[in-house]
Length: 212
Image (cartoon, rainbow, N blue to C red):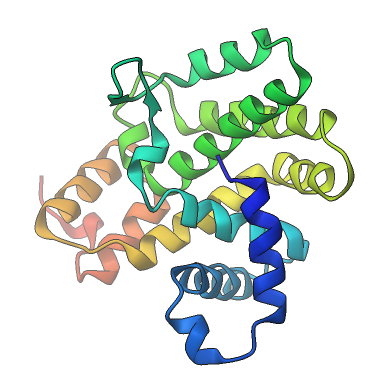
């Protein structure tokens, strides 16, 4: 979940930052460049606050442990999305409920953007993550005030658009090893995904010309 306290700090730091050299030594700046470039390439306009939220989301999940929950023994484990939604719905404290819905939205957006291949190997499809994530951000918006309400509303209303933004960034940053290409080809065989086809063609492989 994106830390909203850190969000205020980053927003201030980015808007006041002047030396470009400092920007390049900051991983936050790396993600900022990726997000702004991708939005520009895809001709997608968004609120500046939402753009920075996406940057912070990427920065948050650099540590993959943030994708998991910590149990009583301190071990990190994956929590099914349905249980995350259930926990948010059943939370009685409004602030706690908002944070849990935000967590569901953040997790769904990142997974559906960066790990589409793994979703296709699960019982649910990417539409499920998009539906749950968009609804979760909508609920977080209803429990929020001021600028964060508007951010969550835009994330909810345009969830699939931002999934496309993150999947494009994933495409730019994922190393195409032989095993990765094989998984992408298997994904294309199963789904005829346009994104998978583009990835293969960039690696010099036209899946439509491959023999069975």
